[in-house]
Amino acid sequence: MDLQKLQAPLEAQLALLGFELVYLESAKEGRDSILRLYIDHLDHGPEGDRGITLDDCVTANDGLVVWMDVEFPSLREDLALEISSPGLERPLTKPEHYRRFAGRLCRIQTRMPLNGQKRFKGWIGEATGTDITIEEDNALKTVPYELIQKARLAPFDEDGAPPPRIVQRGKDLRAITQGGETDLSPEGEEDGAPPPRIVKRGKATQALGTTPEDEKIVPQPRTAALAATHQTVPVEKSAD
Image (tube, rainbow, N blue to C red; front, side, top):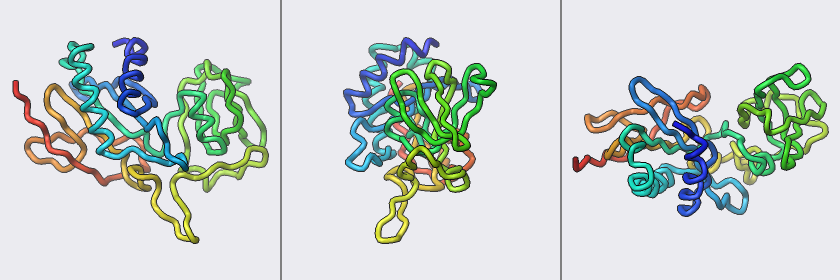
């Protein structure tokens, strides 16, 4: 499967539905091949903290399935389509992502050593069209996007990390503080809960939840800190 060929048409179709394609990956789970899409809202809300809910995943899934049946019918027969929130440890794949989360802690792994280093953990600073600057150990380090193999936010490491001295620390979206009281994180991405996900397999809709006979659990997110509460939508029986 050539993900690069799928990237642009999937981005365009999701945009029509009001969503951004944050990250696209393929995975193998047992005998099942999965096309996994991490999505976000194009409109992040006035505070930039509008989260993805299970209903959003269902909306995106339903909009994509009808389109894919026409544009990529063979993929629909061979793959399970999984729609997911990016979660709190969200992938960073575009310059816009780094700009949006300026001042937040992130982890970056490069394809090859950069000044003898392949793994970075630092506070996000200036993001240009070609590279990202982070503050790590009170020093600024610039990483070209073309060298980045993968990058994610690291919200669960922020409290224990030395505070930045050069980069201005950004808003922690894990908590919204009002009158000294700490509330839950953005809608759909509560602390301690897994990001909402829904999977489309053949003609039947399956989602995270309990395990009645007509439902199938998809594996939990690999992020250990995002543990165990799920939401469920009923399976839509195939007409075939």
